[in-house]
Amino acid sequence: MINYTERLTLLMHDIVTRVPTLSFIDIADVLVFARAGRSNAEGAFATCHCLTLPASEPGYYFWRDRATKAITRRSEWFVTKSPLVTIGTRQIKYLISFTVPRFCDQSLDRSRKEHLYPGAEPWIGKLDTVIHELYHIDPDMGGIRRIEREDGTYSANCHGDQFFEQVAEMVHAYLATNPSQATLDFLREDFASLESRHGGVIGTSFRTFPSFPQRFIERLPEQPECEADTDTVKVEPLRASTVLTHYTENDVDVRQFTKKSSRKLIRKGAFRAA
Ligand SMILES: [Zn+2]
Image 1: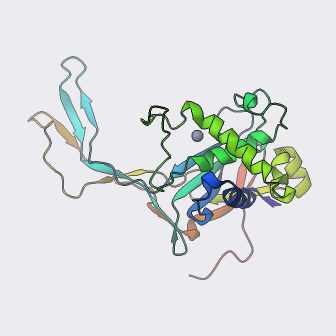
Image 2: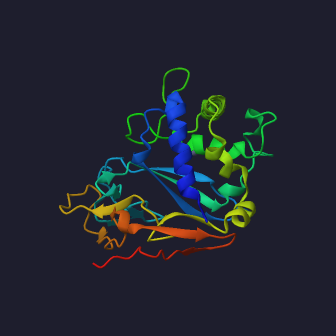
Image 3: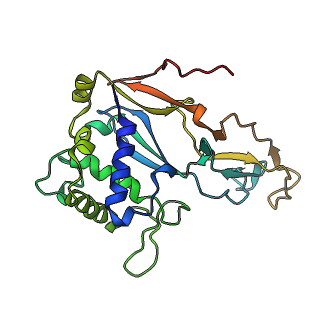
């Protein structure tokens, strides 16, 4: 079977060694994983998730009376935090997820980026997505890259006008370095063809599938005073969170993805005595 996330990781490694704009990236800081996504459904092909964002400022949820607009209820104070993901002793800084089989079936034809690649083969759309996600990694590794406008200010949107053009320039720059066909071949095939050639498509996922490491809220141990509070404002306790906040290599699985579903693979030798 073909390990699709492993192929993507090898490709990304090759890209960052050949494209100077992305050369600051150490692929060992990035974990690639697969999410489920059907080819005939709307949705993202891939997403870049940053794990290095600091905790948010303390905040709370509140509810207002519809007529008087006065606050009637609020939650306890909390902060929003990034989960910790470690593989061995290495702390992962970014996750990049790909939806399978949707990403495998992505084509340049009739897509909004087709005009950036006149006459190109349809699979170039997938290479564009891979480089797009790598370009979201901030050179300071402190979040999602902010895009500078021509006037020197930063766009609130991480997909400024130039973003797509800059990605296309990097795709062309990468291809101009004559990368090995063995590194790229898996992108040329759609999902059905990968399945028949390799007998199945597998990829890294998390034990918590379909859930994966995401920002979570944590109740502040010391609850500060709140300006919203009056005699009538009810303070609702936050429900104890059940999400995993630290993922390790033991939380990483291998799944086989099919056209419509996926299943966890039991690997011989994967289990150790505790
Ligand atoms: Zn994007």
